[in-house]
Length: 389
Image 1: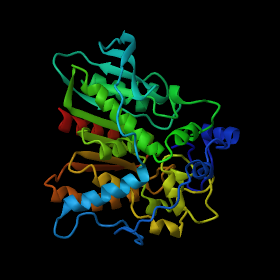
Image 2 (image 1 turned 120 degrees about the horizontal axis):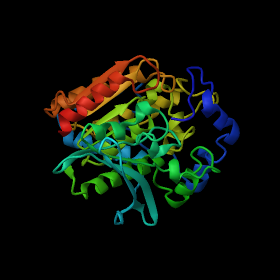
Image 3 (image 1 turned 90 degrees about the vertical axis):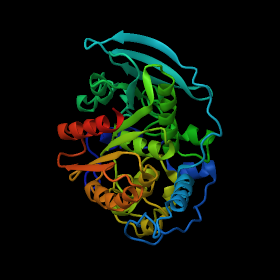
Image 4 (image 1 turned 60 degrees about the vertical axis):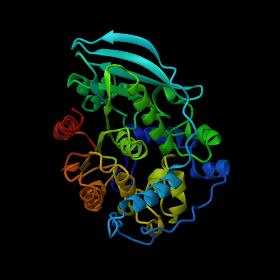
């Protein structure tokens, strides 16, 4: 999630230069309110008023009713997607064969009417339909090129690495990134025209929608097993993965690297509503005047206790499908991530156990900053092998 912050909320690295240059002028929560006229959701749930994460599995085991309650609340904050999906109208723009025998295609397919997603598809050698993995990228303007191994951090070239492992993979530019970003708009400035077009939706909902469109694209390829499609991502790609899985049951398994922090343990939801444009309805639960774009990470705000859900609710919608969370205990961007993930996992395990899916939720904790170290990769890829092969 750009820009990176230290534990004290100080800007660092190239993201600091981005902030100094753009000042986030193009995106602001106040502008979103002016555009949409939104007001605070009037919701009270079994999470409201709790300082700790609420238990998820209901007494008596009436999970169907509990899950529906959770789904409705999550969708209140994610917002309303379009009523229908347009045809993909997919086309291949370029094709190369890499020296490892993998075919890489540059393709485009339709997300919304007249809006096309640029993507790379990797097809390994092999006969018959193969499992596939979506690889949404982290917060980087390299976009799809980073998972594809063309630009950016080679440790995050997941699409290329998994193709070498025998998966069909798809990496694409998320909205506001890569080819879908206006460089004059500033960080998340592209969200302003999005909210003019979709005042009742959210950018996080859009991210999940576009992941789902990737699932649809892959399911139409003859060389893909339609029942064996997973997702893996780091940071921005992590929460794209779990929101996408929560809203699209066709995604069979997922791995999320870093990016997880609950509102209560992070201290406030500012990063989701003000520092980014992802879930602006959460901005109604930021009350402290001391919280700002330079100082929000781990800063406590008592209003967070009144938020009627938390991130573990989103993960609960994924059960009983396999999910792996990796988290750093010294993450400089999500400083409470290790603690948050452990607490969320405690609440999620009874859900998986109650659904006879014990063993389908896993975690891995490490030290090494906000990254995807070799052991995370080994464990994450093995997890996908276990459930998608």
